[in-house]
Length: 118
Image (cartoon, rainbow, N blue to C red; front, side):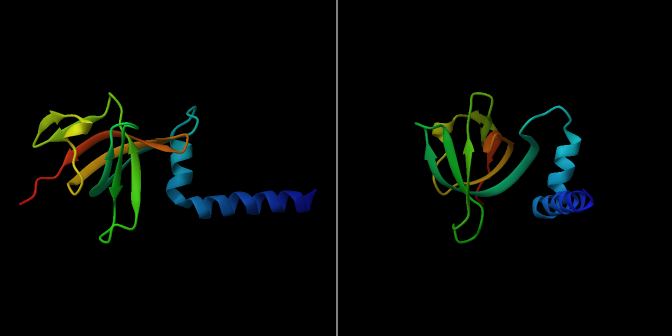
């Protein structure tokens, strides 16, 4: 029995380490929510816009190797030059800032703003 408790305790500690401190904090800060993590944000370059699946793929590194796919819905606030826009107004190569929530393993955009080029 004592050995089982130690193994369980080690497993909990490892989950905290693997998930990182933000993972543990997110789970504690949202009581009653299932599978929802608090809002996060990213800045990157639009790699692909897919109106058929309502998704935007955003490259988040300099070389375009790491990308995050964001689901875009009717509640997503999209802004281009400060004006309200739609998914069709986003274009590959544009720099954007996006906020999103992760639910059930998918990232849902809450806002997307195109960063003006100088």
